[in-house]
Image (cartoon, rainbow, N blue to C red; front, top):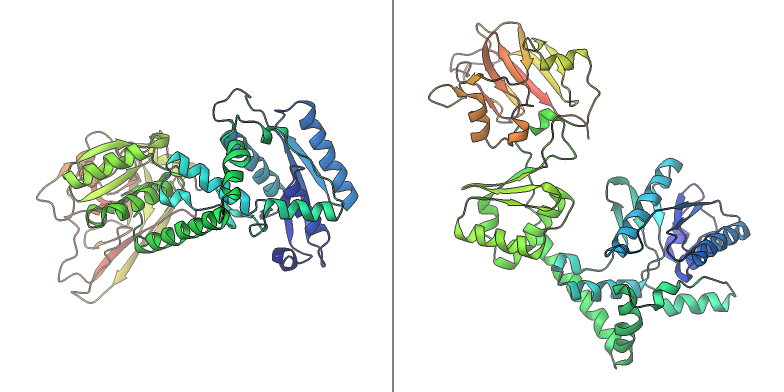
Length: 470
C-alpha cells in the first residue's frame, strides 16, 4: 500500500494486531517495507471466546517474533452478556491502544479496516436510521477522541476482504478466523454473513452500494461546507475558569433559524457532537428543531448531562455541573487565596495566576483622548483616575453587587451573571476584580459603569485575561 512507502525508518507506528487476515496482512506489509518503519504490534485480548482468545494472543506473539517486530498485549474486562458488547469492546480496545501509544511515544495507530468494513458500517448505520453525517464510511485517518496528538490511520481502505485473503494465501501466510464472526449475535456479523453476500449476488449490487456510499459522502461534504461557518463561542466567564475540556458555548439563535430544515438538523447534530463529544438522538434533534421553529425558550437535556438552553436571541450549550474549576496550572498559595474574603492582590502593573491556569495581566497605558478601545470580552479598559495601584481578585460572595457598564444601576452580581448567560455552576467560580469595595470587572463578562472611558481620558488601566493553555 502507498502508506508503507510513505513511512520512513524514523516513523514509529503502533499496529492493532488481532490475528485476523486484515491485521496480519497489514503487519506483513509494514515489516517488508523498505525502508522499514519502527513498528510496535499490540494485541488486545477481550477473553470472550475462552481458549480461542488465548490462542489468538499466542499466534500474534509468534508471528511478531517471526517478523522481528516488538510485540505487546493487554487484556480488557468485558461482560459477555452486555447488550452493547460490540461498542464497548471497540471503546476499550481503542483506549488500550491509545494508552500504549502514548506510553511508547507513538502518534500513529494503524488498523486493518478495508473496503468491505466500510460497506458493512454503511449498512449498519442505515438500519439504525443514522443522520447523514453519521452514515459516511470510516475515515481513512482521524484524530483519536480524547487523544488529539494520536492519529488512527486505515491504509487498507481500497482493498476488499477477499483480495486481502487471496494475497495471504498466495504468500502462504497464516491468519486466525474469529468464530464469533460466523454467528448471528452481532449486527456486523449478520450483515457480513447475510446481507452483504446477497447484495454481492445481485448483478451490479456491490457497485451500486459503493456508488451510494460515495453519493452519501459527497452530500455530507456539501452539507458540512454549507454549515462550516457555525461554531460555538465560549460561554461568558469560562475562559477565566480554565475549563477547556468542558467549556460549552454560545451561538446566535438566528444562525440556526435561518437554515432550511435538513441543513439545520445537520448543523445541530454536528454542533452538539463537537461540543459534548456525544451525538444527540433523533428524538432530541426533532424536539430542538420544533423548539426553534416555534420560537420556544426552553432547556433540553443532552447525552452526558449536558444541557442546551434556547433563549430568545441565543442558543447556549452548558457542560455538566462541577463543584470546582478544572485543568490548567496547579493552584498555588496566591491562587488559593481567591477563596478568602480578602482575595489576592493584582498590582497595577502586574499579573496574577488564577486557579484554572488563566492569567490576569494589569498595565497602565497612555492614549490620546477619544481613542478607541477593545471590544474583546477578555480585555477591560477603564479610566485610571482615582483607581488604586493594587486591585483585589476573589470569588463572588453573597451580597456582592455590580453596576455593569451600560446598566441603569447596580444589581446583585448573581443576577447580572445570570442575565449575561453565565451557567449557574460557574457563577460562584468566576474570579471578580475589585478596586477597594467596588467590582470593576468580571473577566470575560463585563466592566463597570463607574470606571468607563470618558472623552477626556488619557491614562487607562488595561486588564487582560489570558486563558489557560489547552
